[in-house]
Image (tube, rainbow, N blue to C red; front, side, top):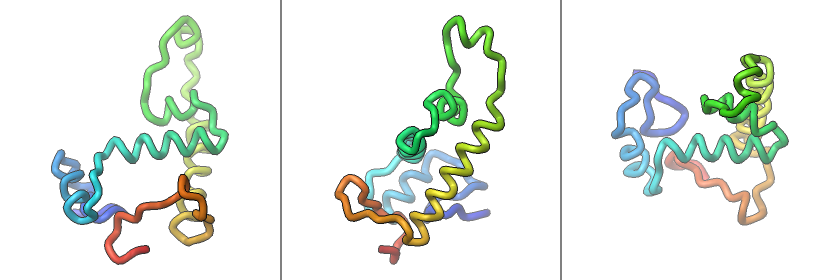
Length: 113
Protein backbone atom coordinates (compact mmCIF):
# COMPACT_ATOMS: atom_id res chain seq x y z
CA UNK A 1 0.00 0.00 0.00
CA UNK A 2 1.51 3.33 -1.09
CA UNK A 3 1.16 6.20 1.35
CA UNK A 4 0.24 9.60 -0.03
CA UNK A 5 1.88 12.82 1.22
CA UNK A 6 -1.08 13.29 3.57
CA UNK A 7 -0.87 11.09 6.62
CA UNK A 8 -3.77 8.67 6.70
CA UNK A 9 -4.47 8.70 2.95
CA UNK A 10 -3.35 5.86 0.73
CA UNK A 11 -3.33 5.86 -3.06
CA UNK A 12 -3.88 2.09 -3.12
CA UNK A 13 -6.84 2.15 -0.74
CA UNK A 14 -9.22 4.93 -1.86
CA UNK A 15 -12.13 4.09 0.41
CA UNK A 16 -14.55 6.32 2.29
CA UNK A 17 -12.75 5.83 5.62
CA UNK A 18 -9.67 7.80 4.52
CA UNK A 19 -11.07 11.22 5.51
CA UNK A 20 -11.93 9.71 8.90
CA UNK A 21 -8.34 8.53 9.34
CA UNK A 22 -7.05 12.02 8.51
CA UNK A 23 -9.56 13.50 10.97
CA UNK A 24 -8.42 11.09 13.69
CA UNK A 25 -4.73 11.78 12.96
CA UNK A 26 -4.94 15.55 12.66
CA UNK A 27 -8.01 16.47 14.70
CA UNK A 28 -9.37 18.42 11.71
CA UNK A 29 -12.87 18.05 10.31
CA UNK A 30 -11.68 17.00 6.86
CA UNK A 31 -13.17 15.61 3.67
CA UNK A 32 -11.48 14.66 0.42
CA UNK A 33 -13.59 17.34 -1.27
CA UNK A 34 -11.67 19.93 0.77
CA UNK A 35 -8.57 19.17 -1.32
CA UNK A 36 -10.46 19.74 -4.59
CA UNK A 37 -11.96 22.98 -3.30
CA UNK A 38 -8.61 24.24 -2.03
CA UNK A 39 -6.80 23.42 -5.27
CA UNK A 40 -9.54 25.00 -7.42
CA UNK A 41 -9.67 28.15 -5.30
CA UNK A 42 -5.92 28.61 -5.29
CA UNK A 43 -5.53 27.91 -9.01
CA UNK A 44 -8.15 30.50 -10.00
CA UNK A 45 -6.61 32.90 -7.47
CA UNK A 46 -3.27 32.41 -9.20
CA UNK A 47 -4.76 33.50 -12.52
CA UNK A 48 -5.49 30.09 -14.03
CA UNK A 49 -8.69 30.47 -16.09
CA UNK A 50 -11.79 29.00 -14.51
CA UNK A 51 -12.49 26.94 -17.65
CA UNK A 52 -9.11 25.20 -17.30
CA UNK A 53 -9.77 24.52 -13.60
CA UNK A 54 -13.19 23.07 -14.51
CA UNK A 55 -11.50 20.76 -17.01
CA UNK A 56 -8.93 19.65 -14.40
CA UNK A 57 -11.75 18.86 -11.97
CA UNK A 58 -13.57 16.89 -14.64
CA UNK A 59 -16.62 19.13 -14.70
CA UNK A 60 -18.69 19.06 -17.87
CA UNK A 61 -19.29 22.40 -19.57
CA UNK A 62 -22.82 23.04 -20.76
CA UNK A 63 -24.26 25.30 -23.41
CA UNK A 64 -23.87 25.90 -27.10
CA UNK A 65 -20.15 26.69 -26.91
CA UNK A 66 -19.46 23.34 -25.24
CA UNK A 67 -21.09 21.58 -28.20
CA UNK A 68 -18.77 23.29 -30.67
CA UNK A 69 -15.61 23.47 -28.56
CA UNK A 70 -14.22 19.93 -28.66
CA UNK A 71 -10.69 20.95 -27.60
CA UNK A 72 -9.43 18.69 -24.78
CA UNK A 73 -7.36 21.45 -23.09
CA UNK A 74 -4.54 18.97 -22.34
CA UNK A 75 -1.76 21.55 -22.77
CA UNK A 76 -3.63 24.11 -20.65
CA UNK A 77 -4.35 21.56 -17.92
CA UNK A 78 -0.73 20.40 -17.85
CA UNK A 79 0.52 23.99 -17.62
CA UNK A 80 -1.94 24.79 -14.82
CA UNK A 81 -0.95 21.69 -12.86
CA UNK A 82 2.75 22.55 -13.23
CA UNK A 83 2.05 26.03 -11.83
CA UNK A 84 0.03 24.49 -8.96
CA UNK A 85 2.85 22.02 -8.30
CA UNK A 86 5.37 24.87 -8.08
CA UNK A 87 3.11 26.60 -5.55
CA UNK A 88 2.79 23.43 -3.46
CA UNK A 89 6.57 22.93 -3.51
CA UNK A 90 7.02 26.53 -2.35
CA UNK A 91 4.52 26.00 0.47
CA UNK A 92 6.04 22.72 1.63
CA UNK A 93 9.62 24.04 1.45
CA UNK A 94 8.77 27.11 3.54
CA UNK A 95 9.32 29.61 0.71
CA UNK A 96 5.78 31.02 0.99
CA UNK A 97 4.97 33.87 3.38
CA UNK A 98 1.87 33.06 5.43
CA UNK A 99 1.87 36.08 7.70
CA UNK A 100 -1.72 37.03 6.75
CA UNK A 101 -4.45 35.16 8.63
CA UNK A 102 -6.30 34.22 5.41
CA UNK A 103 -3.10 32.55 4.15
CA UNK A 104 -2.69 30.37 7.22
CA UNK A 105 -1.71 26.78 6.44
CA UNK A 106 -2.99 23.94 8.61
CA UNK A 107 -0.51 21.08 8.42
CA UNK A 108 -2.04 17.60 8.31
CA UNK A 109 1.18 15.69 8.97
CA UNK A 110 1.84 15.28 12.69
CA UNK A 111 4.97 16.97 13.93
CA UNK A 112 5.04 19.53 11.12
CA UNK A 113 4.49 23.15 12.01
